[in-house]
Amino acid sequence: MDNGIDIILSKRNYICPEPYIQGRIVEYDIKSANISMLKKYNVISNSYYEYLSKLPKYDREVEIGNRIRENRDIQNTIYNGIDETLKKFIQLNNISSSNIIRRANDALYINTSVDLKYTNIDGILVRQKSIYSSLLQLNKLLFLFYYNPDINVDVKGIKQDLLNLHNGYMITVIGTAILLYERSSTSDALSYLNNIIEDYLKHKLPVEYYRNLDSFSDYTYNIYGGFRSMTQPKFIDDSINIECNLNILRELYSILFNLYIKTT
Image (cartoon, rainbow, N blue to C red; front, top):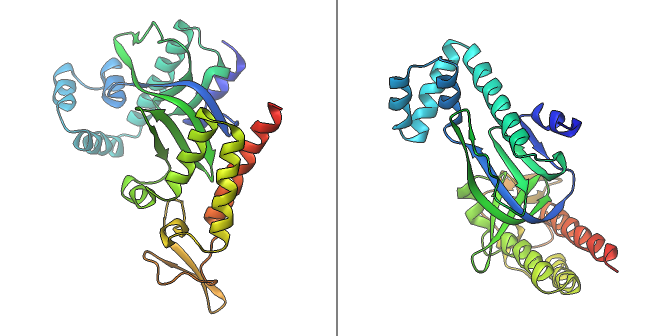
């Protein structure tokens, strides 16, 4: 196994350094990872495993969480079991570290043109969950794109209820730029972004475009020499702080421009 694999497996969460990757990115995760590991190492009985497996996910997580608080060694058993299972999964399928785009605890995102053959690891299922066409990193957020048939995006780093506030606005801008890059041309994507940035700077866009695309998703205003966050916009003028989304737009422009330079 190459050294890169050891580095990836040493982290509970890993993401490749490249800001944009295109291909066939397949998410594989361990089914019911926590209780599967506890059953494998005989921490829980088969009957208790069956009981837990039938619970709603939230209830199951609460019950396991309570057991972990009573005995911290249980968490180590789960983590060690996950690491060992993923290591065997990687070895059996001859996966290179360069093809592992992301690790999120019990899940691996692998850039592969074919479905992996070995998914039953010592009786534990490492299942194929989602398939994406590209991955983009912006402002500590992860965007995963797929076509069905139009472009769709999953975003990691923002809760779904907050993410919904950005649909039709910043999320749509990002998705449109990637769609143009992948299905039309880089110059079309750059031209589109340039126009959006100009309108954004001139406050010509609807106020929803100025909601910060981050884990808080507030509006920020410069009031009385300080910053004030608001969940709802009060007005749109020079007092509204536009830096968060402006940095995202410029970062995306820079990523696509660098890709353009590489191909010319």
